[in-house]
Image (cartoon, rainbow, N blue to C red; front, side, top):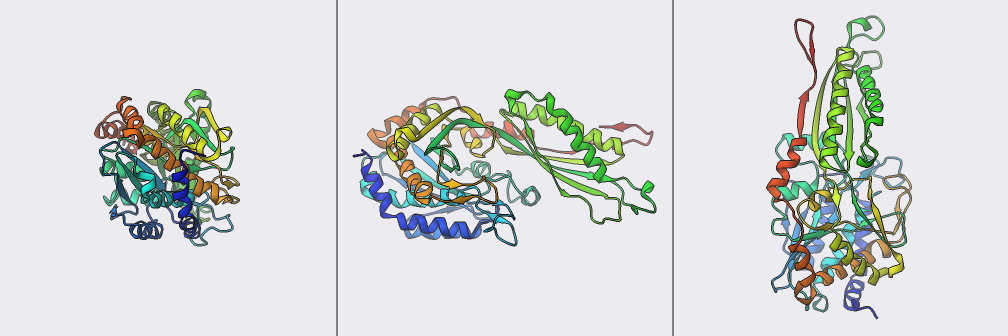
Amino acid sequence: MSRFGNVFTAVDKYRDLILKAERYIWQNPEIAFREWKTSSYLEERFQDLGYRLVKAGNIPGFYTDYDTGRPGPKILVFGELDSVVCYEHPESDPETGAVHACGHNAQCAALLGIAAALKENSVTNDLCGSVRLCAVPAEEGIDIEYREGLLSSGIIRYYSGKAEYLYRGYFDNVDMAFMVHTATRGKGFSIYDGAIGNIKKRVTFKGVASHAASSPHKGVNALYAANVGLCAINALRETFKDEEHIRVHPIITNGGASVNAIPSEVVLETYVRGISIDAIYAANTKINRALAGAAASMGAGVVISDRVGSSPLVNNKALIKAAKIAMAETVGAKNIEVHKKTMTASTDMGHISSVMPAIHPYITGAEGTSHGKDYYITNPEQACVNSAKAQLCMISLLLSNNAQRAKEIAAKGNYPSIPAYFKKIDRLNKNIDAVKYLKNGKVIL
């Protein structure tokens, strides 16, 4: 019998609560910083369990603490509120294209299960310290224009939910953090060394409108300037070092207003991803130069807005060891996979791992293509219930025996202060009017 039998019994008691939450959130997907319905649903369930919530207020989400009443470290556990956009998915919102083809609905259901089980004395009577449970918005880095509007109006300082919450002080005095993400492949649980980070970019090419047939010579075609820019980015790809995992994947979000007019404004959105802040910064400098040169070659202007996206995730080695034990108790040791490599996707959990010990494992339970039209949670028992069990086993392992394991992990590692961290990443934020035309005919990039 598992030494965590009390945990399993407690979670099973709330199985229906967990699975109902997964279905409700799946059926009500919402895009980043607009997850009001999802947040409200979880708020009501948490309050029914007796939790007092600290709400973010002008953006969705909240956090709450379960305190054992005995001194010890504070562990932060996340559930992500937002969905992706995939209009092709049969169950996407027909108006917004929103769909949880990312598995965040399962995360939130598991978080609710953890909250419920923590109220059982059998789970917590031997633990020291506290657990901060956080329903956080805006992990997926989509809809840059909307986020920029929130930033410009002073509602947010950072594009991602975890960075914004960190900046607001919601994670002050937290000692370590973890979350579990749903996966479409693997045996049970899987852990990687980490994931790459990114900058989020919005690039506006500015031309001059003119009739496309009778007077194209009087116009400056912003779409052609954007095309030259895309070609320039592609020509740079062989200069990126393989080991730095640079990824650039632009889309055109505004390609012109009328087919019979020379486009005067074209907008691109893209990420620049990489394995370190320095690698991202260097690659982004090249890309900005290429975009400016492309605009200048066509006589166009270009405005580049760079914003901090996600920092690279580095999973804490001591937490990996603890997670392996907790996960093995849940699904068996043979179903744990530890990959000695860095994923080339990004997560804003990287902000958290930059300032404290953190880990971001994966659990199976979904099928299809992540963010794609065929993604579904096909095994909610695994993706939600077993996820909650494993995370509670993790909490128990860290906070039992006078929280000795958690204290040892918290005492190790050289992490910057939160203000020092933000000072470092803020150098990635830029607003650049990248081409200037002088009266003497010279062009300055």
